[in-house]
Image (cartoon, rainbow, N blue to C red; front, side, top):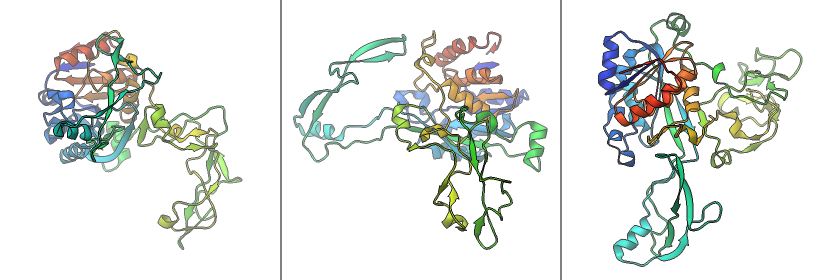
Length: 398
């Protein structure tokens, strides 16, 4: 494991000069929004193709890059990555319920500008009904502290209730791959170990105590009508077969499991297969009868459809685990474990050129991978050192 305190452009070039190669890049670069007034979040480095050209050179052929971004300028980073020579393979969506709306109250601003008085409606109520005080976790010293809740006021202009931004609830993750060096992906995997993603290692667990079923798949005949018989995939004796006991196929969506997110998913009954109207008839032709509800099969469980997607386990202690973690955008270690596992072959090396406080390094170590991390900001590098030392006492620091 190698942790480097320095500029990622210079340090990646040094690694290239030394002949270093990595199997994957998993990173959370600056979003270029000037977040919380931080100067490191407005340098343009994430939009610079040069950044990703260096990452491309370090990757083995077929190696994957996963990079977080902000919803409003994801396209800028994705284009820079593509211009650097990567193939954009997908976008993974990370949903969370902890976002805070950074919106200007236009009505209040108008009243201030015009000198209007606003009606005082009292304090916001906290979940326990307390209108005066609420608690918050001070990550700097790890202790819960009290603060007064803000007061609610109301004006009478036509602009009351207008603002400038929505509450953030998702972050897109670009999924890109370095072009293959071989004529086929199988040949590339056999030569370099890279080019594929770890499906089974990232399946979503179902309920092991229930019988799992999968629907008999259907195909389409030359006349555009789908039947069991012309599919070439007909089950021998029944309409259902045992589903994959390893779990549900991973999707390009993940969520934090918070109530505000899971409540947005519909409630579903037991997923044991069944018949439903086709949603694909207009695309793939006419079906001869009803269509099974899921070609992915049922797992006998029920409840929120959020269970169909990966949900990393996280806690506040990840921010304060014996050390003051002042980084403003800490990602859950379990989330980063999942992403490292998805794109890194066994025994491979993960590179994070924007290491921050080290969640990716902790994740890579947990998964048994080697890790190279680069962080320019001394404050965050020291936090990273302290966090990762708990998992890897013998490593190099530069």
